[in-house]
Length: 182
Ligand SMILES: [Zn+2]
Ligand SMILES: [Zn+2]
Image (cartoon, rainbow, N blue to C red; front, side):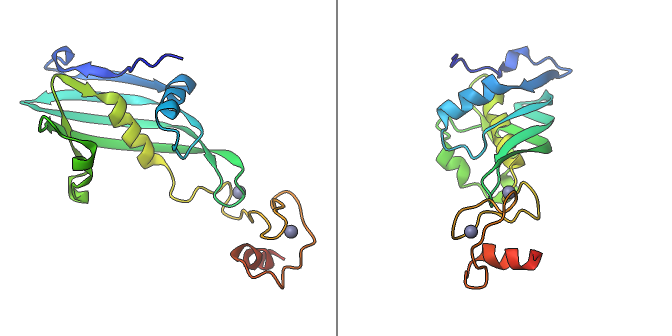
């Protein structure tokens, strides 16, 4: 497994007319991300799109669009499913404080979210794309809006099977939901 980071753009390679970068992120790219960040809340994805970088004085404007399929786990029944996702973004990168850290970035207010830093001569497109993909993730992934989830008592997946647990004595959100469907 390669650990080489790709998508590091040297500012000198961006011509006055801007630089278009085709994006095609497959299993290998996501596998490396998972290695570096085992807490990722999705299994994998296939994301394609394009990014355009242009220089405006010392600032770098990054515009892009991404779309594809995300491999997610349902928040109710825990089953894997894939969901389409897409995002468009405009980011302005300004020359950052030399010691800008991730912690410092998080202190930015929401109004500043489309503003980011770069340091040195390199735009770390890899990190930018990871941030955008995180933004693509649904807050509550559901394989189906009507997914009934797992039985609170026996763990049966109520989407594909029924169980004999008495729903009237089970005081759980799942049971309440199951009742609505009967
Ligand atoms: Zn589900
Ligand atoms: Zn049950």
